[in-house]
Image (cartoon, rainbow, N blue to C red):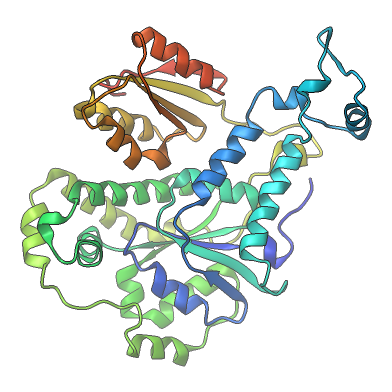
Length: 394
């Protein structure tokens, strides 16, 4: 098997969480290490890179018509016919294979984040807009990557979001969205720790803030870097750089969410994660999944890709529950395609919020539900097809 995990640049560090969870202060503490360079967040644009990579490498025709050897490339560039299934198809050839696409995307990330980082230093970034699909993509690009998941209490996280994003105005705060974002982050943690080949560490923020020296030391041990200067960490805390204080909105927010069963369920999940944080950590960096074309032996077992089409018309009241029921299955190779038949009830706005969790969504008139399904299946790239109506749940 070809190894991609021996050099520092092949072992990036990713700090991922929901917004206002403490990613910044953990980033600052880690950047005190001379062996790490953790960049700031960048708007979650890698979601689109992930989608581009998946669509290129999982397109069924690529393996058939992608150029895989020097002789075929020479013939295509010379305009010579290349015979497939009894037809001349030089015009159908693509100038790259899955392997070329893999290295192109990997090199793209390295050029963005590691170009100016010395080769002996590990690079990385912190981001608050990613989920488990993005973790899978990053770990495939960099099998030696390690993931740090800061975890702040749901109430404190929501309170901080109201302050930062809603100008302290509780009535303007989209509390339902904040609860969804928090649960998405918990699902990212859960899905990551179902994989024995993923190196990930949960960092409860309460403990980190109360003792940032030990909290930083714990992360350093996990990453395998030397201890980080204690005095520098304490100086950061003394300057209150990244530490929040005050609770002027706390009482009103507690009244707003205290009896909400969704928030109570979220709070219970958080407590469970904090209790199990040490047990959930993989302290070493094990071998991560390697693309099949890098294997010198038989391709390892994999999840078959399942494409689910969701036909939707005027279903704004039920659509999010349907999509949540799909996401909550936790299946790692799921393609979700939503076909909206020209709805006017706010469905498009819902899908814009869910854009990062969907592979494809199209809003245009159709003739009927069967027509919408057929259009959706024509876009599907899976091995198994299915559908779920927008008012149904799994």
